[in-house]
Structure formats: C-alpha cells, structure tokens
Image 1 (cartoon, rainbow, N blue to C red):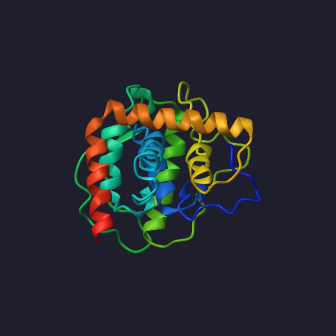
Image 2 (cartoon, one colour):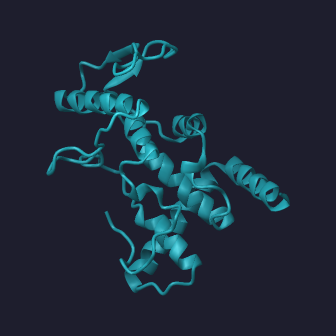
Length: 211
C-alpha cells in the first residue's frame, strides 16, 4: 500500500494504518459477509475531507451500528461467491467465558474453500477479541491480503493521507499532486452521485461549529 513520506508524522485519524484495530477487524469481518466494507470506509474518509476539510469525525469515532449502516448503504457487492456466510437469526445470547456465542450462521458452499477457512478463522478472531483473549489479526506471512484478486477496485488509502498533507500545506511531488487530484475527483464524483450526503455533511458541520 502506498503511504506518505516516512518523515511526515501520520495524522491521528489515519486509523487504517493499525491493521489490528477494532475498526479494521470489523471491516474485515463485514468483507467476509459479502460487503465491500473497505471501499465504503474509504469513500467516507474521502468525502468528509472534500466537503468539510476534515471537520467531520473519522470513521473510527462512530458507533459500530452507524458504521454497519454506512457499509450496508455504500458497500454492496453483487458477486454471490464473495459472500462466505450470513446470519440467520439474532445474536442475542451471551457466550460462556472462553467459548464463542451460539452463532446463527449459514455458510455458502459455493464460495471457495480457502475463503471459507479464512473467514471462519476471522470469526474466531472476532470472538476472541470480544472476550479480550489475545489473538493476532495478522495471518501467516506471505498469504494474500483481503484485497488481492479483487479486480476493478482502484483505491488507495494514500489518497486521504495526501488530502490531509495538502491541507497542512506540505509540499507534494508531481506524482503525489496527480494522485491528490484523482482523490478529489473521486470524492466529488461520490458526492455528486449521492447529493443528500452533501446536505447531511453540511448540517453536521454547522452543528459542530455552534457547539
């Protein structure tokens, strides 16, 4: 993944750099359920920078239910083989200490076996995390990341970082300026396709300025 200049101190809101954070784990879990969660999160981070110069909170400041609603709205995937499992009921039971919750889950037998195995492991990681049982979110070295093989998904987390660096008046090279232009075009295209978002973002910004 393309990152900013190492000499540049990362913005405190660059949550995507911590691959073992709660939000990154949740996004990975939503991806396993057939949602394009990474891209939905990326679109939010671009849009909030383009509309309000970063005055809206970063995605990791939202409650889980708000994040899930955003992913449901803007992270739809059409390919059924990308969905490895789905919930068949309400997760309303507490787990016994050291055990997973009773899980109302169906597994998609049309999905590739390696994807099923990967996402079952992810489910176990999430359950461990919920009980504060130490478990690494990183897989074995050399294994494919969740972005590998996903075609037609040209996005980079370097783009919101470049937008922040430009706002901070940091000098960018030609390649970075070109990427910055693409980032702003992508944000504007997303907002143009969903004009109600501009109204929502503006309302939130006004409320924040009054407080």
